[in-house]
Amino acid sequence: MFKKCLNFLYKAKKKVNEEIILDHDRPNKYLIELRQIEKIYHTDAGNFTALRGVDLQVNTGEFLAIIGKSGSGKSTILNMITGVDRPTSGEVMINGTAVHAMKENQLAVWRGRNIGIVFQFFQLLPTLSVIENIMLPMDFCNMYQPAERWERAMTLLKMVEMTAQANKLPTELSGGQQQRVAIVRALANDPPIIVADEPTGNLDSKTADAIFTLFDELVSRGKTILMVTHDSDIQRRVRRAITVADGEIVHESAGGSPV
Ligand SMILES: Nc1ncnc2c1ncn2[C@@H]1O[C@H](COP(=O)(O)OP(=O)(O)OP(=O)(O)O)[C@@H](O)[C@H]1O
Ligand SMILES: [Mg+2]
Image 1 (cartoon, rainbow, N blue to C red):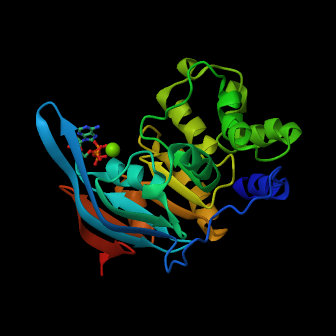
Image 2 (tube, protein in one colour; image 1 turned 180 degrees about the vertical axis):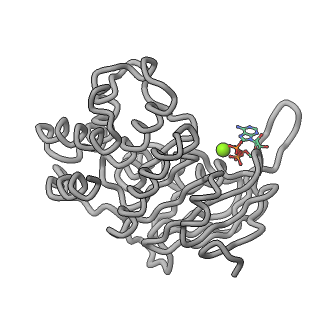
């Protein structure tokens, strides 16, 4: 089922604006590289160091799991990669683009075309219907012909068995349904990189397994996926996993065993 839908989504791929998707200002060995990332939050209670010199390299086509206890810094790492938040010091290079140095307006369009984000708390727009939420990234980045966007969004919803909810508002959905919408919204622009923060956290084991299968299929088609997960089953099935503790990467494993 995924394959059929994905084949349709790929065949329909036609950008209105045929700009280069990833910049190549600086040749880079890795698709994603974090160099000595430090993140300090300034709060009323004082400064809090959430990341302490994180280095990470990810190659194209990798499926990377990020694991670690609550509060260890997993979402903060993802926010650095997506440019949702900026490091206090250090560099974030994505295929030659210096994400940490980008201006806000450049960043929004760059992100919309290059990275599909599944947020930990979904971040669906409450005033838009489910289908409008999925069409929004295509509208915002002017991807695909306007007439194609609805059908594309419906195909994405079909993959997660959500077509019946297309015209509902996010508040009318269960947590698991909202999560499924958030997952396929991240795929709307067919981005080369997908960053997902506990994308199966609200799903039953059968649906979680289906999402993992979808992600695996995307990786086999050349996508790069970074996924925060507490699911030990998924941790065993990905090719590479890093463990974050107290703002640092403390462990790395491949195929379920330490390297
Ligand atoms: N905006 C902020 N201001 C202050 N502190 C923050 C902020 N965002 C995160 N933190 C702190 O940074 C640390 C790391 O947070 P982060 O959200 O990255 O954790 P996490 O590993 O994703 O946890 P969880 O598994 O619960 O989602 C936590 O101690 C958190 O309280
Ligand atoms: Mg988190």
